[in-house]
Image (tube, rainbow, N blue to C red; front, side, top):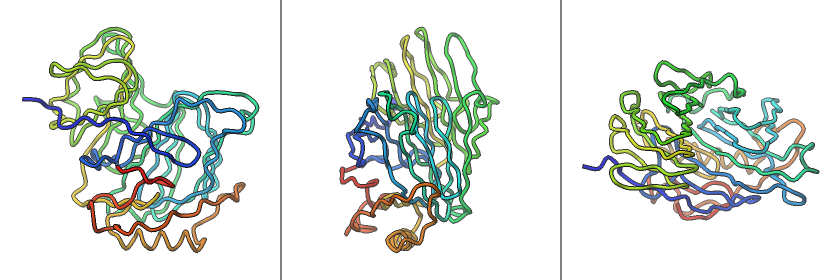
Length: 312
């Protein structure tokens, strides 16, 4: 009996400055564990006049995780942090009751054409922590757990697995693991996984249960404990998941909450310029018009991300 519950294909989504590949949410699978949103950025060539310039915008009820393969992003937020995100580092911002941030091409790279490539992820917060004080942590690549087994390289980006623990301060049981195979390999992680589990193929080929899968696909397991697959040489995958929440989650623009009223309040606050400002960046992204189906259709999602009407 197959352990693959669903295969999700990457879909194009326009976030204003860039066309990205949307992976989550998906009509038939809104969340995998606490992971509620995943965008694959690029690879995209950054050169004048096409820079990444995502002006200040708000979040509530989630943690954002940015992980780059190539390029660089300048992160600024309303907590006063100004950090350049480079490949292999983890940028982890917990919005809680409300935070504002911007993401732009660093000044020193605006005269140098370069590629930008990475993942942008939202992890929903447990209901009791949705209105916690916001905070920010930046973890450089050498601080993350790395290990090699049978010619396969592992990096634990967030969470805990196999006696390894990332320094990223997560708020519910979860895992995000980078796996790279230099040679053909069989991966058996089921004994270490829990909750819901997804496998994203960035490069290469994965064989599972007599089927072949390639880049830009997510395989969602029916049972994380049965996670076993083959990777061909040169393949890179990301396994993510964890314990699901007992309550549903709603999304409205950049806001995540377990109740509709919280989303409406956040929307009004942003429209009234009541969110905290970002020091050193006075830009502003207007909120898209309210979705008339908010809370009436699709229980676990109210509206797609940022200025984007892609059907999810």
